Length: 366
Ligand SMILES: Cc1cc2nc3c(=O)[nH]c(=O)nc-3n(C[C@H](O)[C@H](O)[C@H](O)COP(=O)(O)OP(=O)(O)OC[C@H]3O[C@@H](n4cnc5c(N)ncnc54)[C@H](O)[C@@H]3O)c2cc1C
Image (cartoon, rainbow, N blue to C red; front, side, top):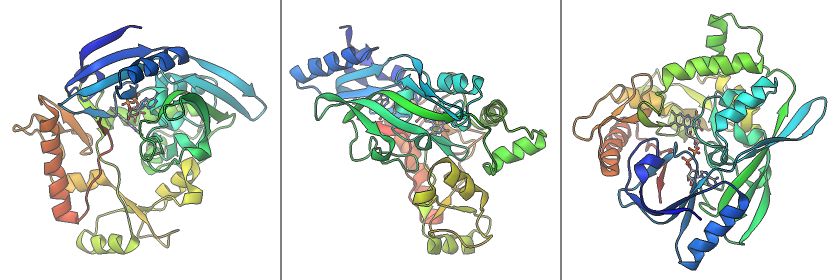
């Protein structure tokens, strides 16, 4: 087993900050995952599995345990009929390669999730979502090593507790399951509108009426290019805050003070996933009654109103991206303490103005 010692963790987060890992090793098979867990157990060390580090902020203290970087490869077709195809992807595959593979085969289901950085194994952890789609709505099941039971298990989608940018892997069972593969069911048909507002706008402006998975991927790619910095060029973790979900009464309170604020009906439980979200995103508030009264509001809009779009903070070396106030960037920060200090400035100002406490999306590990 090739286990490295005292490894600089800034290379394992697209924010490029963090201390050192006591041990770090790559695993490209289930057997290696199991052997590495046993190795750590014998030394009473904690274990954490990661992919590309695109949703991780490491602490300056580093990690006093073993980090396993998942490199398990492979995309294979499990079954196919006239309407759908079921595939399994190794957790170490680059997520966007799986999207590209599916779109080349004219399959629909994950084209809206094009260009999200990271590996397949990280995708279920926060139930990746974009442009009205979520992984949870196409995921059939996943394979994982259960570190409580010390064996490989299969978890059905319904047992993953998927919700908006979260799952059991990010909450109650954080760190318990080391995901080795996921199974997706994709459809042999074009996606149907209504689409997410900004996506529909792009399609209309470019007179794209043929809603093939390829055209949707192309549109999403172009929109993302403008909104998000490339993490290989500018250090960032994508959206740094999740969109708050508030009560309708609170939304009305905010609307009185900020008439420009917009809200969307938060996806109802039965409407979660791609379809629910797409319907919800189209029903912009102010327009009529909603489902269960909860409203999703834009964290990016609030951060922008708080004066934090395209900001370059000299004190901490952190900033926010010109294309989206929601994206915190590391320009010349040296430590995670710098990042947290800058984050606190944003959180405090937004709280002062809106009375809403923003929640961080990337995980602060360990
Ligand atoms: C520019 C940019 C844009 C982004 N856009 C989006 C977006 O549109 N939508 C969205 O939802 N996210 C987005 N993200 C966040 C991120 O890309 C996703 O969350 C991605 O799925 C993380 O994958 P990863 O391999 O980098 O995971 P990591 O960052 O390595 O890990 C994230 C978490 O998952 C755990 N984990 C990773 N792999 C495994 C595994 N195999 N088994 C068990 N646990 C594991 C880690 O321990 C950690 O807790 C964006 C990030 C960036 C930098």
